[in-house]
Image (cartoon, rainbow, N blue to C red; front, top):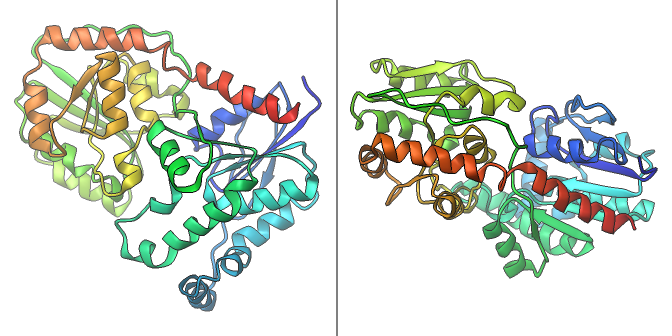
Length: 379
C-alpha cells in the first residue's frame, strides 16, 4: 500500500452514496484513505471524519437569501453552518490529495488543498448550475451561486470528472474545464439471464420515492399495458407522503407491488429474476434529461432488458448495446407502444445482449480510469 494520504470529501451519507462509496473502495488498500461525510462508509481500510448536516437558523436564512440575491456568493458559502463545521472538523487533516465530490465540496476542498499544498481532484457528479432549473427558487437564488463557484473554483482543480459525456461537454463548453467521464456503473456481477415465464413480463424499478422523479408515470404506464405485464418497485422512502401517494395510486392494480429496498451492493442479484428494468425519468431539467444513473447499469448487471424514455445518454447506452427499448417520446403511451410490440424472443435477445454488455460497462473500467488520475496527481 502506498503511504500517500487521500482525503475524500462529500456532503452526503457515505454508506448510501453509491458513487462516492465506489471511489473509496477504489482507494482502500492502495492509499491511506480518509472519508469525510455525514455517515461512515463502512469500508475496511478507510478512516472516517464525521461532518454535520447543519442548516441555517430562521434569521440566518433571511440573511443568506439576501446574500444570494446580492451576489455575495463567497459570504453566503463560507457562512453556511455546514461549511463552517466541516472546516473545523478538517482543520487538522493531513493529506497529499484532496478529492472533492459535488459543487458544495469544491470551494472548501480547494481551500483545504491550497492550505496543504496538495492537488485537487474535483468529481462534479452532475451539472450544478442547472441542477434544479425547473424551480423558480433555484433560478433566483442558486443558479448564479453555482455558476460563480464553477467560474471561480474550477480552474483550481488539477483534474475533473463527471458522470457522462453530455455533462462533461457542458462543463467544457461553458467553463473551459477539461472534464473526464467516470460513469456510475457498479462492479461486474457474475449472473446469467433468467428464462422468461410464458405469458408474463416481469418489470422492476428500484430507487428512491422522490417526487422530482415523477414515478407515477410508471404506474400510469401499467394502465396502458395488457395483463402480461407486472411491475415491482423496490423503493427507499415508501413511508413518506409521496411514497404513500404512489401506493394509493397503484392500489387498484394487482399487477403492481411495492417491496422493501435492498442494500445497494445486493441490487443486481435481487432484481436478476425480472425481465425488464424500467426507468421513466421526467426530463424536468438539464441534469434529468442528460441522466445516466447507476440503476441503468444495475439493470445491465442483472441481465435485464432495459426500457427507457429517450434521454440522450440512457438512449445511447441502450442502442449501443441493443439491450432494450427506447420510446419515441417522454410519455407513458409511447413507452406502452414500445413494450407491447416486444415478443418473448425479443426480450430473450435483449437480456442476452445485456449479459454481453455487462463486462464492458462494469465499474472495474472506471476503477482503472479513477486510479490513473489519482496516480498522476500524486506522482
